[in-house]
Length: 442
Image 1 (spheres, helix red, strand yellow):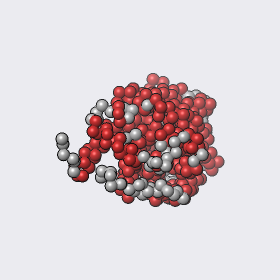
Image 2 (image 1 turned 180 degrees about the horizontal axis):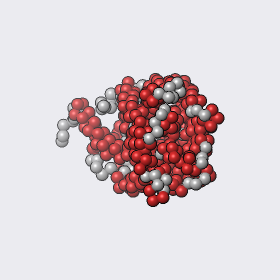
Image 3 (image 1 turned 60 degrees about the vertical axis):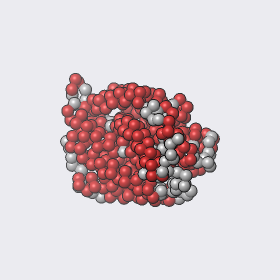
Image 4 (image 1 turned 135 degrees about the vertical axis):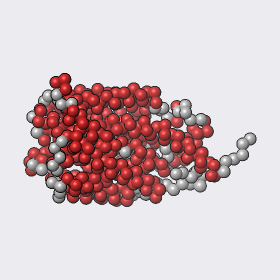
């Protein structure tokens, strides 16, 4: 009979097991999210030429960019519940292959009605992906690790900006007129291809859960399952009805709505703001648009790590929201100065994106089981309605005032409200400290 492991060796085994899980899952999920986010927001680069080619107004663009989130809202909860029931592997694969086809179909847009339709269908196709991955990570990691894991997954957003900005700018510059297609048509077609390939790979690379992971031995599986069992929220609600009637869920949805106001203000208008600061070359716009996202990558990881280590969520989240609000406000003061535009928008982008991994540690502390699937999806879908509101308001205000400043000030105000709502949160501001029976964690 083997002697019992010492605390140090037990901790080493646990850390090695989680490291193995992380290296198996996170890089692939991260790449999938980069592809997802690129297909969602490449309309911001297509706008640079698409509007003049099709004679669309700023209001038409803003409504079309945002209507994605109506389809997303309507199908988010059922999609996530189905993922929980049929398994992540098949359902995430279906989501990715469907949105790839719809995104590529954007090249056929000719009228505002067609633009609205394809954006709506793209939202329907993608519904369930982001909250599905957030839910999927709860199948593997206890709450004390989720801030960092969420950050490693969600840095797909700024990486999509760092990679997608120069790539989109290059496509817009090089492919205009090739085989009779405009550069924005090539943009939609080329950037849809990775999602289609990754959707097929999901079927082979993504296990549904711990028991389906052939690359874990039995002792590793038992360790992961035991940690999740100890981490279970005994006070969690377990019914769909409880989700809808849970005031905290709606409170969290309101906070996330404010966060998303900032995110989509950046995502859909960053190239426009850089161009307005005096940059005319499409590739240069793409390169400079990557700067705020590069800053955000560092900020996301550091804030999430700090939140996990201190087991504190509320002040980390509120501080990031305030920093983002200040960044958006300051960006309206220096619209003609490229350096100051990049500095202020970097602060805004870093603040908004640093909110996300910390925020998503909250829902799993309130809900579990099917209720977690529905609750996470509901919070995400309600919050992402800001993706409809934010570009629509900015586009409308730009048509009326001939400036994006009024829209950006509105976004800054929304983020400040999000900070206030965060500070009103009670009861889950801190993760539970480790019990003596748990192994130490990194």
